[in-house]
Image 1 (tube, rainbow, N blue to C red):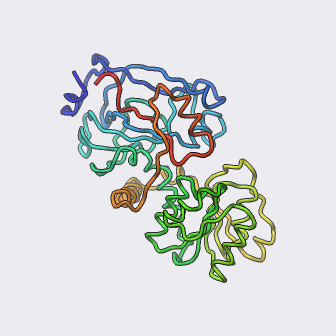
Image 2: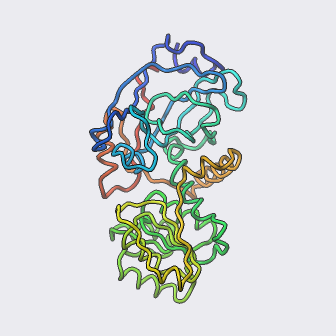
Image 3: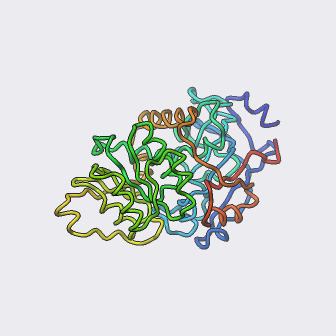
Length: 352
């Protein structure tokens, strides 16, 4: 039986009899990411009641994946574990009791951390259906960066979308999504970057002000906005960079930390809290995914997918690797100077 003929089935009783093997990236011991990730294979399981079987197409290599491999993430799996916090593919079979998803549907994994494998058997509510015309490369990057940017910009305490927001790491996946989504809200952005060659591309992408992440860049930005209020600061770096954007906030402004690229702590001056009454908050996408209702989550992702289809929200791709080159993919993702996300391509599985 082939994958093509499998798509017409609503349930499969014994997939282990099929000529399939499932390549998976496994973590057996925390350590240096490129060495900790190993490629193995096993047979695939049939979808049970309420389950679906998805054939993975693409999966990105995210900073969270690297942190998990190192053993430095906020929530670590029991070992051994299959790696991968994000991915997308096509449903090839569904089990009994599944009515709203059919073979052939394109989906991305919502609440899985084992996406780096050819096939995923999961509950139907652990995926979100995608528009058929959304490319696979974009689909696999929908879960984390665009949704994080959306949540950062749609806080209840951000009542004036016309006021300035400031962010560091503006060239990151989240940073570029912030620029794109802010443009749909007509909200101007101040964007700090650490490499001068990133300034022009981010201006072309719609960033209103793009400057170097230093005191000179801060002075340039403040001069450009005059006395206009800055209501929101988005921090993915920590350390001095976090304090720099925090110092630009107007009275009562909000500072949200969602990453810590510099691995340096955030030390808040007392004056920022006493005299400026700043609100210091954090955001972790996983908490929202765990606490929000499925209907609310699906609604947000439908909006984000729509922006992607309209060309208003793009997630650049730097390079694509087959899973057999997982070490090289991780090395590339961990290095500097990239122009987008590193993807793993699972489309050619050798048994279809």
